[in-house]
Image 1 (cartoon, rainbow, N blue to C red):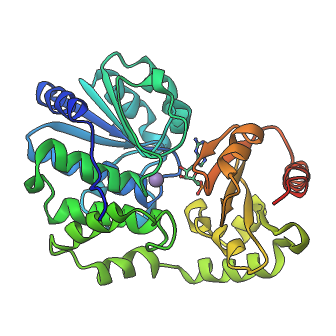
Image 2 (cartoon, helix red, strand yellow; image 1 turned 60 degrees about the vertical axis):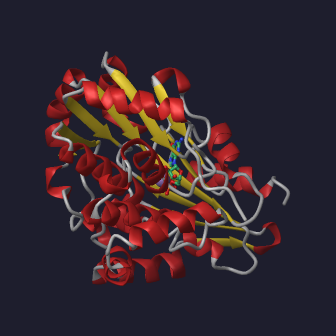
Length: 341
Ligand code: 5GP
Ligand code: MN
């Protein structure tokens, strides 16, 4: 026997009334949106639209092309050319629902508008250490697999099973599928399988969806992975550590986008000897660091202590600004080769 996931009833009552009172709603997720960010924001968008709300999804850099097949993705606002529009939407909203991130800095250039907006702000998220002061109502559950799973439980509690139709279920399944690597990590809670079973029962087609979610590489992307694994991977078996380092030049030469690199870091953990892995990736204005761990080693602590970031115990990220690739590589090696496991 186990307990079903419960969501605080009082909070649900507040959410329900805030949504009822609002007419213009913005749903916002983090920069470099992944399947969980796109899936959870679109799921909430569909639910609120069905209630007749004037609702917008804002993603700081728009919808990544890998999720452009998700229903409603064409309506997503974001990217450099729509920054002003996004700011305007945030500042004039009656209600902001933030999903899949824990602090305003995670929306990059939209941080100021998000903080300045005077309306009520709701957070539905599963990252560690939420910025409590930035939101008026928090559904923050770091033990839950994904924002999509949490949105499932919150929506079910607030608006009942009929609010989760096939379209909503498609979006939610996508985020659960991506944030758990196909139920292979963050997958120890029975309630996760309850949620998946309920979504599959909405007549979605998980087999087909998995092909859209996973089997979507361009030839360039697959060739880039071969290059990265053979030439940009450093392995330290005695420290149970390995990391990739990818420069902007590597990305340009292989004609790949930043979303194409998503998932590469997980290959470090495929190595039997490796328990902690990292990916260092150069971006135009910063160097991004992604961290993953197999067992108990807490990479969230490392991300927040050394890389201005955060995330989850076993998957976290952050960045270095104003440093060269070589300096970041040295820093990563210093940090990880001095940690005992
Ligand atoms: P990734 O390395 O794939 O970008 O992110 C791994 C996990 O850590 C994701 O859940 C992501 O949302 C989170 N994450 C990545 N970068 C940051 C960051 O700078 N701050 C926080 N709080 N979480 C992050
Ligand atoms: Mn997530």
